[in-house]
Each structure stands twice: as C-alpha cells, then as structure tokens.
Length: 158
Image 1: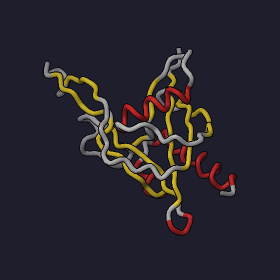
Image 2: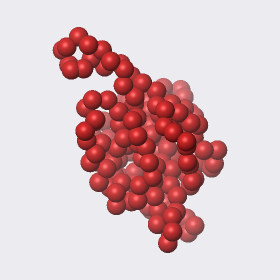
Image 3: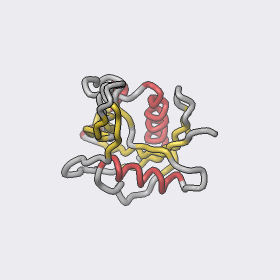
Image 4: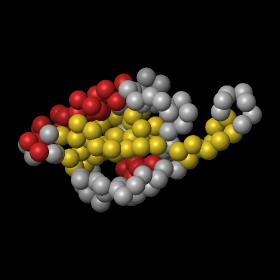
C-alpha cells in the first residue's frame, strides 16, 4: 500500500516581488546539527479515506502549533519522493506570522540500541526563506514541489 502525505506550502511576496516560502526544520537527533537538506514543507501522512486538504491543514497545525491560515488553497500536485511516499501539496499566498512554533512530538530510542527513549519535536524551527535559500535547505525530494510553486506563481500573473 502506498504511503501518502499531504502538506501545505505557504508563500509570500516581499519587496521587489521576491517570493519567499514557509519551511520547517525537521526535529529529532538525526537532523539536530544539519541545515542543508534538513528542511521540509509542513506535511504528514493521511488515510486513504481522508480528504488530503483536511489532512494537510491538520498536519500543519500539529507541526506549527497554529492553525493553517484561513485562505484559498490550490492543489500543486502529487510528488513522489525517493522513499516512494507521495506528497499531495497545497499552496497558498499568506503572510503567516506565528508568535512561536510549538510542534507535536514523537518518541525515539536515542542513541539507537541504548534503551533510552526520549520525546522529540517533529519540527524544531520554521521560517520564511527566499527561493535560493529554500533550494539548498529543502530535502532534495521536495525540490520539484518548489519548482511547481514557481510555475504556479508565474502562471497566475499575481
């Protein structure tokens, strides 16, 4: 059975029509000291009978600690990841500005084999990033999502 995730890619336009995207640094010890290729769009898995946009909004709220903005979302598409997982991505223009990021957590034995289980946030940071910065920080499997957003923004004429 194919694993499916749904996510939200927010974008905004800064001065000079510069596009920025909202990205999140993955939490846990594996990503703790990494920056390049250690960021993601807010996303998470959903069940086959669940509406992908509803799932994307739920996952965004769980990872940011704040509901997804109440704006119109467009579906950017489905993006197969190197793992085989498919992410359904929704995009929206918003000047999202949470006071703080409070992510849900997951339990993990760390160091592996130690018998010590700790709780880690799914996301330990999130921020607005310009497109060039996002290209170096996002996990490589999500770069096609960024390119689809650029096509969407350029094609919308807004």
